[in-house]
Image (cartoon, rainbow, N blue to C red; front, side, top):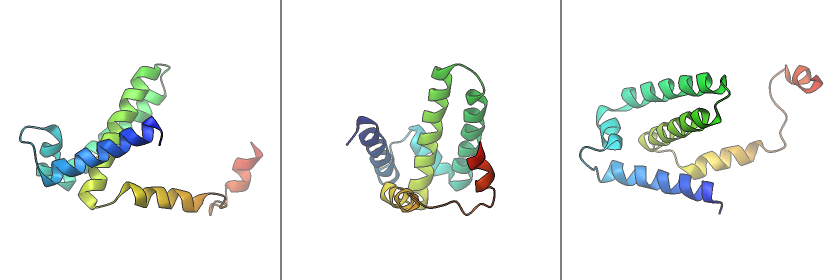
Length: 110
C-alpha cells in the first residue's frame, strides 16, 4: 500500500470513528452535527478553491486546496455511508472503457 493510499484510508477511518464516537469541539464533529447541507456547502466551497488555485502557478496552494477538498469529500462519503472500496470498485470498472460521450472523438484528435 502506498503512503498516500494508507494516509487517505487512515483519514477515512478517523472520520468514520469521529462520526460514531464524536469528539466535542472537533471540526469533524461540527460538520456532522450541522448535517448534510453544511457538508455539501463545504464541498462546494472547497471545489471552487481548488479551481481558483489550479489557475495559479503556486503548487503549494493548489496542494493545500486539494487536501481540503479531499477531506471534505471523505466527510461527505462517511455521512452518506459510502466506502473507499466502493469508489475504488467504480474506478476499476472504468478501466479500458470508452467514454459514453459523443465528443470523445474530438478529444482524441488533440
